[in-house]
Image 1: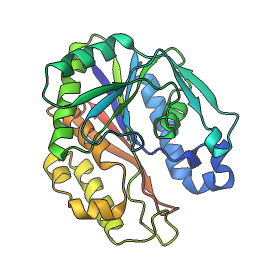
Image 2: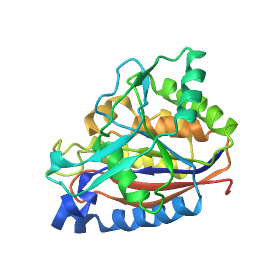
Image 3: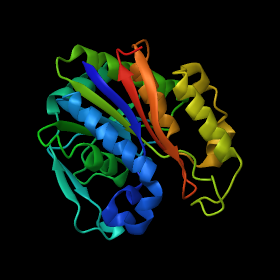
Image 4: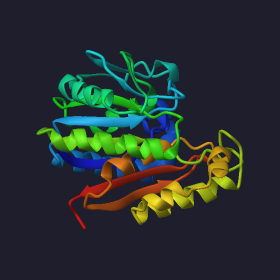
Length: 266
């Protein structure tokens, strides 16, 4: 059963050990992540299923990282202090794998011990009070069509609903990377347009609005949130869900969004 759902950013600057003084500029996001961590704890999950990554994504297939354990490591950012080990839920991963064998969507397995920062950041920030909770880290999106991502989310929903375990779903990504002149990808007016479109689709819990976001604008904005959101919307489709945007800010020209999707709450 699905008991919790959220969308989070994954900027390493959210970690004090990496962001240092820059972390203060993301205070609204940090506060929202703390609140989300409390809500996740209250939901008492057996498993945290994560959807993320723009690194190592397969162009023509969705993928699942299936390994005997996962490690968090931020040494690439000069952080030799923050470490962590997460245990997988092999049973649920096997159920996902078996279901995907009967589907037409391309799907592959991977086996990586060290997690990318794109999923390590939200896991570290959200699960500190859940040391015994297993994780699936991560389910990776592809570069197939938007509708394929929605369909993949629907399949994941079927597997999760059929499971007796309490499952929390966390999709992660950053919104536009072009919101100011000092942004990583420089400034582009499509950045603001895309973020406003994504926020509107979330506020209205509207899959049709999400699917109608302009493809060219998405490319120009350099976002990495759209495809995780598509999977999440497919997973939550036809469920009683109330979206709550906890924070949205972009102090470094990159959109940082924290949203909780309250299950069975309308």
